[in-house]
Length: 92
Image (cartoon, rainbow, N blue to C red):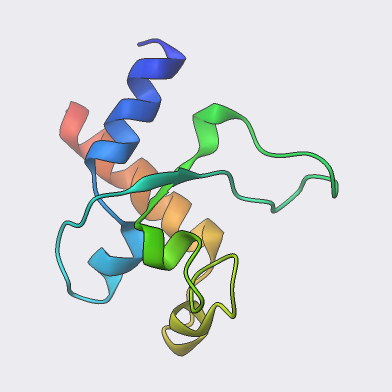
């Protein structure tokens, strides 16, 4: 699988936060988690997570107040773990 195919497969999963909140599949943008990287850097494209516009760049999203994430005790690494599990399960 190429990097582009991987990123497309991640986006096709829909927003990981919406899924955790019980909203089901919603269209997703790709977010590069910041955990473990420096200020001006981003994670590899192999470690992207799917977030809808509201949970990615919205006022309560990851690049905002992160209120939904805090309310559900969730962070980028939780969504990454869910994403990897879903993709591995779908591949089996």
